[in-house]
Image 1 (tube, rainbow, N blue to C red):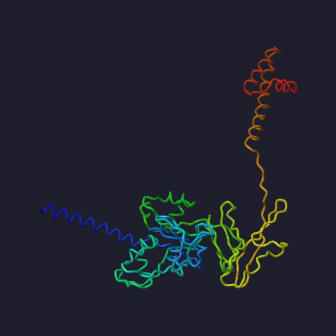
Image 2 (spheres, helix red, strand yellow):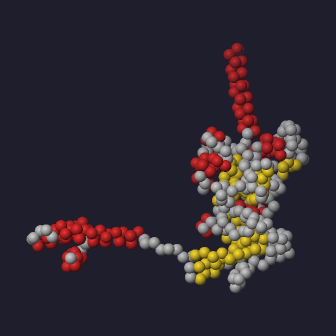
Length: 389
């Protein structure tokens, strides 16, 4: 009987320790560093818990524009709102990010209305799929006791993000929830970055500091653009395989690595959100070249590129580059050239060595055997070489 009590006590201590460790992990999440003075667009990776649809995801994250949700996932504009998203499927959600006290957090949403039976842990871990931890929700809403929340109250959900440059480059910061047994090298390879960068920006000095089921800051390379620093949408950031709408919805910009990591913008054909109609998008001094159009003259290529907007104007600029590439010899050409170099050297060498022999028959036979057997030349080619010698 005494042994049973001791066994039960040990089991209780183990369970209590596990719960304590889980609680500590939930309280010591790594926040995303952010010191940029400006706001920016960022992305979070939302893994659906149950079957849902795009409309429900837009509503959950308070995404202002449905088209921006489509663009973050490179989905066609014809995609219906009720498109089914299966459980455990990844959807990238665009958010607005601001920096405060060295930490990045979502601005203007999302918000969540407390439902019957909700707890902060459930809201963080299941509703928002571990993109945020319950102590962070409590802190953002000045909740001293996480167990005391009121049905019907609205909570601010502080999603992690950043606007900082990485190694002097503009990037799109992506909140990626770490899967169990993942490693930094695997994550770096998946997202086209490197292990050292991931470790540095997340303050990770050892693999055991990479916590499963918690978000990590992944910098995604952004396309280069011509957007002016005084533009209302500066910096306009888009990651590879995504598109964004800007200038009150009048302009659509696409980022593709295949386009030399250069943002390609064109009129969206959308109805503007704050203007009666979209302003002119023609490039001055281009003889009628409009936004997104390209003209070529010889090796020179001129593009009418997007440069930003203000309250009444869409800025454009002419960007010139070269469309010609320097041709390099093919492998076959290189091999042919190398072969003939060897042929010339070998023929001269064998002629020199065999010239010491007085017998013409031996001289010719040896020369023919060496050149034809080793260099695979025709008899006519060899005789021609002899005549020249």
